[in-house]
Picture 1 (cartoon, rainbow, N blue to C red):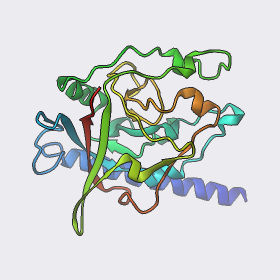
Picture 2: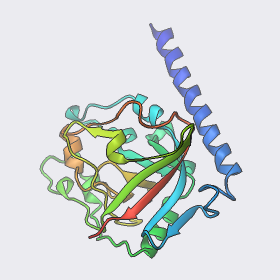
Picture 3: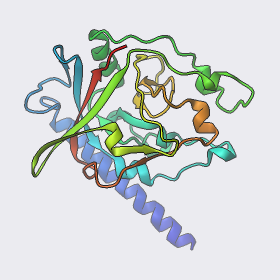
Amino acid sequence: MMAKAAEKKAGAGFRWMVITISALCLLVAGQVNAAGPEFPELVHVNWQQRSITFAAVVTASLWERQPRADPAARNFDPDHWHLIISATQANQAVGRVAIFSAWATDEEIAAALSTLGARGEKFDKRSFTRRMDADSSYPDLRPQGSKLRLTVSWDGFFGRKTVSADEFLSNTSGKKLDLVYIGKQHPSNCVICLYGCVGAVCPNRALTVRDYMQGKSRWSLIPGVLPEDGTRVWITIAMAGE
């Protein structure tokens, strides 16, 4: 049994290594034209549509296969918090597995959204650091900032396909993503978090850190929507009004 467990762990590590190397190879090869034929820059700003677009690599299946902690046992499961993180910061060993790994950094994405007028309030970091304190009110805080809308596109056999986050993600609470911009407030390298975490440039206002710690929510992928791991996609984040 121990041998089988070791073999399974080694297999998972090998898959992670292959996907990581593939992502980094794409990163190196695509620096000049990372966002696609129409976008020569890493983060393309569309002033007319008030949106930004950047390239990323799908690592969704790997994200979903990560062992999940039990929040009811007061454990913490950082692997399943990340929707998008910078590929250069992805690291399975420290909970850096996201659904998408982006070419651009969180700082570049934050700056691009800021040029469109995205603004966010200062978010108290104790909302995260006090997550284990049942008597603290900080984990109940919700981030406040400009509302955002996310779509993901990729080229397939029948042409380019575009989906919203609600089309590939579901939550046991029934709640949807409510993304807001707070900017770069924490050195976590996270672009979009599935919860209201100070570490993300764009956290989810719909679900607090407390919601996670009390086991009130669990994210999962809707089968058959996203392409396979290693596929290059284009992430668009648009201003959605205040």
